[in-house]
Image 1: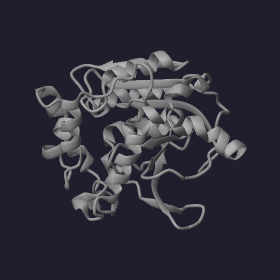
Image 2 (image 1 turned 180 degrees about the vertical axis):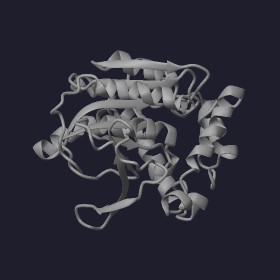
Image 3 (image 1 turned 30 degrees about the vertical axis):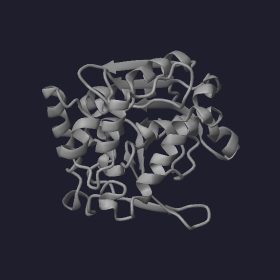
Image 4 (image 1 turned 45 degrees about the vertical axis):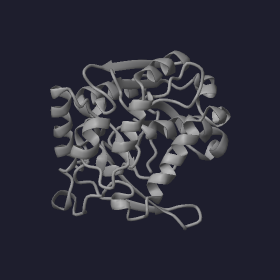
Length: 301
Protein backbone atom coordinates (compact mmCIF):
# COMPACT_ATOMS: atom_id res chain seq x y z
CA UNK A 1 0.00 0.00 0.00
CA UNK A 2 1.57 3.29 -1.07
CA UNK A 3 -0.05 5.11 1.84
CA UNK A 4 1.05 3.39 5.06
CA UNK A 5 -2.16 4.50 6.78
CA UNK A 6 -4.58 1.67 7.52
CA UNK A 7 -8.11 1.38 8.81
CA UNK A 8 -6.64 1.04 12.30
CA UNK A 9 -4.55 4.24 12.08
CA UNK A 10 -6.44 6.61 9.78
CA UNK A 11 -7.41 9.95 11.31
CA UNK A 12 -11.00 11.12 11.35
CA UNK A 13 -11.61 14.27 9.35
CA UNK A 14 -14.63 16.56 9.27
CA UNK A 15 -16.39 18.69 6.70
CA UNK A 16 -19.38 20.99 7.08
CA UNK A 17 -22.56 20.50 5.09
CA UNK A 18 -23.89 23.07 2.58
CA UNK A 19 -25.47 25.26 5.27
CA UNK A 20 -22.72 24.62 7.86
CA UNK A 21 -25.31 23.29 10.31
CA UNK A 22 -24.19 19.68 10.00
CA UNK A 23 -20.68 18.30 10.41
CA UNK A 24 -19.82 15.06 8.59
CA UNK A 25 -17.12 12.67 9.79
CA UNK A 26 -15.05 10.65 7.34
CA UNK A 27 -11.71 8.92 6.89
CA UNK A 28 -9.81 8.81 3.62
CA UNK A 29 -6.77 6.59 3.09
CA UNK A 30 -5.44 3.83 0.85
CA UNK A 31 -3.32 3.60 -2.27
CA UNK A 32 -3.05 7.07 -3.79
CA UNK A 33 -0.62 5.99 -6.54
CA UNK A 34 -3.32 4.66 -8.81
CA UNK A 35 -5.73 5.90 -11.45
CA UNK A 36 -8.55 3.87 -9.87
CA UNK A 37 -11.39 5.98 -8.49
CA UNK A 38 -11.99 5.91 -4.73
CA UNK A 39 -14.49 3.54 -3.12
CA UNK A 40 -17.10 5.07 -0.82
CA UNK A 41 -18.23 2.72 1.99
CA UNK A 42 -21.72 3.05 3.50
CA UNK A 43 -22.31 1.21 6.79
CA UNK A 44 -25.16 -0.82 8.30
CA UNK A 45 -28.02 0.03 10.69
CA UNK A 46 -26.67 1.70 13.87
CA UNK A 47 -23.13 1.30 12.53
CA UNK A 48 -20.26 3.78 12.54
CA UNK A 49 -16.94 3.75 10.69
CA UNK A 50 -15.46 1.69 13.51
CA UNK A 51 -17.66 -1.29 12.73
CA UNK A 52 -16.04 -1.97 9.34
CA UNK A 53 -13.71 -4.98 9.37
CA UNK A 54 -10.08 -3.82 9.01
CA UNK A 55 -9.21 -7.03 7.15
CA UNK A 56 -11.79 -6.29 4.44
CA UNK A 57 -11.10 -2.56 4.24
CA UNK A 58 -7.30 -2.87 4.16
CA UNK A 59 -7.49 -5.55 1.44
CA UNK A 60 -9.34 -3.11 -0.81
CA UNK A 61 -7.36 -0.03 0.32
CA UNK A 62 -4.13 -1.69 -0.83
CA UNK A 63 -5.27 -1.14 -4.43
CA UNK A 64 -7.13 2.20 -4.38
CA UNK A 65 -8.25 5.10 -2.16
CA UNK A 66 -11.12 4.34 0.22
CA UNK A 67 -13.51 6.67 2.01
CA UNK A 68 -15.28 5.58 5.18
CA UNK A 69 -18.26 7.69 6.02
CA UNK A 70 -20.74 8.08 8.86
CA UNK A 71 -23.01 10.25 6.73
CA UNK A 72 -23.02 11.12 3.03
CA UNK A 73 -21.72 14.39 1.68
CA UNK A 74 -17.93 14.27 1.37
CA UNK A 75 -16.09 15.61 -1.63
CA UNK A 76 -16.67 15.77 -5.38
CA UNK A 77 -14.54 13.16 -7.17
CA UNK A 78 -15.07 12.94 -10.91
CA UNK A 79 -15.65 9.19 -10.68
CA UNK A 80 -16.73 7.05 -7.75
CA UNK A 81 -17.41 3.43 -6.87
CA UNK A 82 -19.83 2.81 -3.99
CA UNK A 83 -19.85 -0.12 -1.54
CA UNK A 84 -22.96 -0.52 0.61
CA UNK A 85 -23.45 -3.06 3.40
CA UNK A 86 -26.90 -3.84 4.83
CA UNK A 87 -28.85 -0.58 5.19
CA UNK A 88 -25.89 1.09 3.48
CA UNK A 89 -26.82 -1.00 0.45
CA UNK A 90 -30.23 0.67 0.35
CA UNK A 91 -28.55 4.06 0.33
CA UNK A 92 -26.10 2.92 -2.35
CA UNK A 93 -28.93 2.02 -4.72
CA UNK A 94 -30.55 5.44 -4.34
CA UNK A 95 -27.22 7.26 -4.68
CA UNK A 96 -26.68 5.54 -8.02
CA UNK A 97 -30.22 6.27 -9.18
CA UNK A 98 -30.59 9.86 -7.97
CA UNK A 99 -27.09 11.37 -8.08
CA UNK A 100 -27.07 12.04 -11.84
CA UNK A 101 -30.39 13.94 -11.81
CA UNK A 102 -29.81 15.81 -8.56
CA UNK A 103 -26.15 16.70 -9.00
CA UNK A 104 -25.81 16.83 -12.78
CA UNK A 105 -22.33 17.53 -14.09
CA UNK A 106 -21.22 18.88 -10.70
CA UNK A 107 -21.54 15.44 -9.12
CA UNK A 108 -19.47 12.28 -9.56
CA UNK A 109 -20.11 9.60 -12.13
CA UNK A 110 -21.16 6.52 -10.16
CA UNK A 111 -19.11 3.88 -11.98
CA UNK A 112 -19.67 0.55 -10.19
CA UNK A 113 -21.67 -0.68 -7.19
CA UNK A 114 -21.01 -3.34 -4.56
CA UNK A 115 -24.10 -4.47 -2.64
CA UNK A 116 -23.26 -6.70 0.34
CA UNK A 117 -25.66 -8.35 2.76
CA UNK A 118 -28.51 -6.20 1.56
CA UNK A 119 -31.83 -6.25 -0.27
CA UNK A 120 -33.98 -3.80 -2.11
CA UNK A 121 -37.25 -1.93 -1.74
CA UNK A 122 -40.66 -3.57 -2.04
CA UNK A 123 -41.46 -5.08 -5.42
CA UNK A 124 -42.61 -8.18 -7.25
CA UNK A 125 -40.82 -11.29 -6.00
CA UNK A 126 -39.20 -9.52 -3.03
CA UNK A 127 -40.05 -11.65 -0.01
CA UNK A 128 -40.05 -9.99 3.43
CA UNK A 129 -38.45 -11.70 6.40
CA UNK A 130 -40.48 -14.22 8.37
CA UNK A 131 -42.28 -12.85 11.42
CA UNK A 132 -40.16 -15.02 13.72
CA UNK A 133 -36.86 -13.82 12.29
CA UNK A 134 -38.04 -10.21 12.03
CA UNK A 135 -38.95 -10.29 15.72
CA UNK A 136 -35.54 -11.67 16.66
CA UNK A 137 -33.79 -9.08 14.50
CA UNK A 138 -35.67 -6.26 16.23
CA UNK A 139 -34.92 -7.74 19.65
CA UNK A 140 -31.18 -8.00 19.04
CA UNK A 141 -30.64 -4.89 16.88
CA UNK A 142 -32.26 -2.45 19.31
CA UNK A 143 -30.47 -3.33 22.55
CA UNK A 144 -29.06 -0.27 24.39
CA UNK A 145 -25.43 -1.45 24.11
CA UNK A 146 -24.92 -3.60 20.97
CA UNK A 147 -22.04 -6.03 21.55
CA UNK A 148 -21.08 -9.35 20.05
CA UNK A 149 -22.66 -11.44 22.81
CA UNK A 150 -26.03 -9.68 22.89
CA UNK A 151 -26.51 -8.57 19.29
CA UNK A 152 -24.09 -9.42 16.51
CA UNK A 153 -23.68 -13.13 17.28
CA UNK A 154 -27.27 -13.62 16.10
CA UNK A 155 -27.96 -10.99 13.44
CA UNK A 156 -24.55 -11.06 11.72
CA UNK A 157 -23.37 -14.66 12.15
CA UNK A 158 -25.17 -18.00 12.35
CA UNK A 159 -25.90 -18.69 16.03
CA UNK A 160 -25.79 -22.47 15.56
CA UNK A 161 -22.65 -22.68 13.41
CA UNK A 162 -19.32 -23.08 15.18
CA UNK A 163 -17.48 -21.92 12.06
CA UNK A 164 -19.58 -18.80 11.69
CA UNK A 165 -19.39 -17.98 15.40
CA UNK A 166 -15.59 -18.35 15.39
CA UNK A 167 -15.43 -15.96 12.42
CA UNK A 168 -17.70 -13.54 14.24
CA UNK A 169 -15.53 -13.48 17.34
CA UNK A 170 -12.46 -12.90 15.16
CA UNK A 171 -14.24 -9.94 13.48
CA UNK A 172 -15.18 -8.47 16.86
CA UNK A 173 -11.54 -8.67 17.93
CA UNK A 174 -10.32 -7.08 14.69
CA UNK A 175 -12.62 -4.06 14.84
CA UNK A 176 -11.20 -3.27 18.27
CA UNK A 177 -7.68 -3.05 16.82
CA UNK A 178 -8.49 0.58 16.13
CA UNK A 179 -8.37 2.50 19.41
CA UNK A 180 -6.48 5.38 21.00
CA UNK A 181 -3.22 3.42 20.98
CA UNK A 182 -3.29 2.97 17.18
CA UNK A 183 -5.14 6.06 15.94
CA UNK A 184 -4.96 8.56 18.79
CA UNK A 185 -8.76 8.59 18.81
CA UNK A 186 -11.27 6.79 21.04
CA UNK A 187 -13.42 4.12 19.43
CA UNK A 188 -16.93 5.24 18.49
CA UNK A 189 -19.95 3.39 19.82
CA UNK A 190 -23.05 2.28 17.94
CA UNK A 191 -25.70 4.85 17.08
CA UNK A 192 -27.98 5.54 20.09
CA UNK A 193 -25.51 3.83 22.46
CA UNK A 194 -27.19 3.42 25.86
CA UNK A 195 -30.06 5.45 24.36
CA UNK A 196 -28.13 8.59 25.31
CA UNK A 197 -30.06 10.43 22.60
CA UNK A 198 -33.34 8.89 23.80
CA UNK A 199 -33.04 6.56 20.85
CA UNK A 200 -33.44 9.35 18.29
CA UNK A 201 -30.76 8.04 15.92
CA UNK A 202 -32.04 4.48 16.08
CA UNK A 203 -35.64 5.59 15.50
CA UNK A 204 -34.68 7.75 12.52
CA UNK A 205 -32.88 4.83 10.86
CA UNK A 206 -35.71 2.41 11.64
CA UNK A 207 -38.26 4.86 10.23
CA UNK A 208 -36.33 5.25 6.99
CA UNK A 209 -36.07 1.48 6.69
CA UNK A 210 -39.83 1.04 7.20
CA UNK A 211 -40.55 3.48 4.38
CA UNK A 212 -38.08 1.64 2.15
CA UNK A 213 -39.81 -1.69 2.76
CA UNK A 214 -43.39 -0.37 2.54
CA UNK A 215 -45.21 -1.68 -0.60
CA UNK A 216 -47.19 1.57 -0.65
CA UNK A 217 -43.93 3.49 -1.17
CA UNK A 218 -42.75 1.59 -4.25
CA UNK A 219 -42.42 4.78 -6.31
CA UNK A 220 -39.83 6.13 -3.84
CA UNK A 221 -37.73 2.96 -3.84
CA UNK A 222 -35.16 1.40 -6.13
CA UNK A 223 -36.72 -1.85 -7.33
CA UNK A 224 -38.95 -0.45 -10.07
CA UNK A 225 -36.07 1.75 -11.33
CA UNK A 226 -33.39 -0.90 -11.72
CA UNK A 227 -33.61 -0.55 -15.50
CA UNK A 228 -32.04 2.90 -15.15
CA UNK A 229 -28.79 1.22 -14.05
CA UNK A 230 -28.22 -0.41 -17.45
CA UNK A 231 -24.75 1.15 -17.69
CA UNK A 232 -23.76 0.43 -14.08
CA UNK A 233 -22.12 -2.94 -13.32
CA UNK A 234 -23.15 -4.31 -9.92
CA UNK A 235 -21.53 -6.92 -7.68
CA UNK A 236 -23.92 -8.55 -5.21
CA UNK A 237 -22.48 -10.56 -2.32
CA UNK A 238 -24.50 -12.44 0.28
CA UNK A 239 -24.37 -15.21 2.83
CA UNK A 240 -26.22 -18.39 1.97
CA UNK A 241 -28.78 -17.75 4.75
CA UNK A 242 -29.09 -14.14 5.92
CA UNK A 243 -31.22 -13.88 9.06
CA UNK A 244 -31.72 -10.12 8.67
CA UNK A 245 -32.42 -9.70 4.95
CA UNK A 246 -33.55 -12.88 3.17
CA UNK A 247 -30.93 -14.18 0.75
CA UNK A 248 -33.68 -14.68 -1.82
CA UNK A 249 -33.78 -10.90 -2.28
CA UNK A 250 -30.22 -10.97 -3.61
CA UNK A 251 -31.21 -13.56 -6.19
CA UNK A 252 -34.15 -11.43 -7.36
CA UNK A 253 -31.92 -8.35 -7.51
CA UNK A 254 -29.38 -10.16 -9.66
CA UNK A 255 -32.12 -11.21 -12.06
CA UNK A 256 -33.67 -7.73 -12.17
CA UNK A 257 -30.57 -5.55 -12.48
CA UNK A 258 -29.33 -5.21 -16.10
CA UNK A 259 -25.65 -5.91 -15.35
CA UNK A 260 -25.28 -7.76 -12.04
CA UNK A 261 -23.35 -10.77 -10.85
CA UNK A 262 -24.04 -12.64 -7.59
CA UNK A 263 -21.65 -14.39 -5.18
CA UNK A 264 -23.10 -16.54 -2.37
CA UNK A 265 -20.85 -17.66 0.50
CA UNK A 266 -21.32 -20.94 2.43
CA UNK A 267 -22.14 -21.36 6.12
CA UNK A 268 -22.62 -17.63 6.52
CA UNK A 269 -25.26 -14.98 6.92
CA UNK A 270 -25.60 -11.21 6.96
CA UNK A 271 -21.93 -10.49 7.69
CA UNK A 272 -20.47 -12.96 5.20
CA UNK A 273 -18.12 -10.15 4.12
CA UNK A 274 -16.45 -10.29 7.54
CA UNK A 275 -16.46 -14.09 7.67
CA UNK A 276 -14.74 -14.17 4.25
CA UNK A 277 -13.04 -10.78 4.56
CA UNK A 278 -9.92 -11.39 2.47
CA UNK A 279 -11.65 -13.56 -0.12
CA UNK A 280 -14.50 -11.12 -0.66
CA UNK A 281 -12.11 -8.17 -0.56
CA UNK A 282 -10.12 -9.68 -3.43
CA UNK A 283 -13.34 -10.37 -5.35
CA UNK A 284 -14.34 -6.73 -4.92
CA UNK A 285 -10.93 -5.52 -6.12
CA UNK A 286 -11.13 -7.75 -9.21
CA UNK A 287 -14.63 -6.47 -9.98
CA UNK A 288 -13.68 -2.81 -9.54
CA UNK A 289 -10.53 -3.25 -11.62
CA UNK A 290 -12.47 -4.71 -14.55
CA UNK A 291 -12.66 -2.24 -17.42
CA UNK A 292 -10.53 0.30 -15.57
CA UNK A 293 -8.76 2.69 -17.94
CA UNK A 294 -5.38 4.23 -17.15
CA UNK A 295 -6.77 7.74 -17.43
CA UNK A 296 -10.08 6.97 -15.73
CA UNK A 297 -9.61 9.04 -12.62
CA UNK A 298 -6.92 11.50 -11.65
CA UNK A 299 -8.75 13.79 -9.25
CA UNK A 300 -8.57 13.87 -5.49
CA UNK A 301 -11.05 14.62 -2.79
